Image (cartoon, rainbow, N blue to C red; front, side):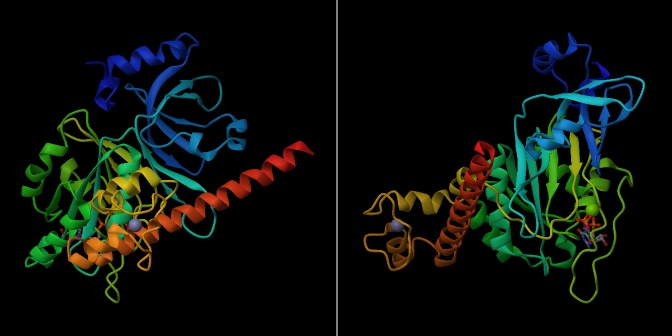
Length: 339
Ligand SMILES: Nc1nc2c(ncn2[C@@H]2O[C@H](COP(=O)(O)OP(=O)(O)OP(=O)(O)O)[C@@H](O)[C@H]2O)c(=O)[nH]1
Ligand SMILES: [Mg+2]
Ligand SMILES: [Zn+2]
């Protein structure tokens, strides 16, 4: 096993890298990203890299992200990343706040542990957003309901989460309990890349420390007043687990807004979408006053939960409005260029 194989490097990747190798680039995986500096592990050593200045003028989604396979050139100064291999999956969200742009959380991931606390943090509408984003990324979501020790009688919450998760695995556990390692074993096989996402304070770093069998990440108690996290983790970082899986811990997200995730949204709400196929009009918006809408007929019959139908319609509208804004912005840029 080459040293880079510990990070998930395969023969297939080596084949795809050949063209870059012939240019003298060194392969590596981005293990952390912090204010314009990317740490890249080459198998032998970790290099702190920059990217060519002109990359900042291109789309941000093309900048390297944690999990990326990159080609690095070592020279006299700071090593430079000159190539990013095509991603097999990429988790993006709309950046927090009013700005309309995407933010890459992690790439080349197989499994996303969508973490939520079983206490005050529990929120099905938020879970649905994470599920849509994960399904859109190309990775597989696993819903991890944490802090079971604080809320042992939480079967009803698990049932609720299962409705939202449709066919994805859902489990309740305690991130401080060694038994959880075994529970998660089917999703942490060697060579698998896992990304932990969720609000601040849900226990992502606590679970990281458990799975790493060492205190690699700082953790901090949630605020007494409102049980909110303190945003302890400040940057995304990839770790090699003792069993050979790769684990990415991320900072808690204040907001989980979707970005161009129409496909993932439809996948996350496949139950609603299935009823929608029966609507009288093909472009049915599934408004509750629409005639011939099978989604609302299903709600009326009790075959579909009303809150779920509403959640889908709301997210679809949110994405449609976002797409319109994006189109307008693109046209503006287009006009600007012509002048
Ligand atoms: N009782 C209990 N406490 C937990 C559990 N998991 C995490 N905690 C506690 O919850 C608090 C927050 O945990 P962190 O691991 O720092 O949370 P995080 O998701 O990494 O938070 P950010 O880095 O801010 O995004 C800490 O005090 C942990 O000890 C659990 O299963 N049970
Ligand atoms: Mg953390
Ligand atoms: Zn309809």
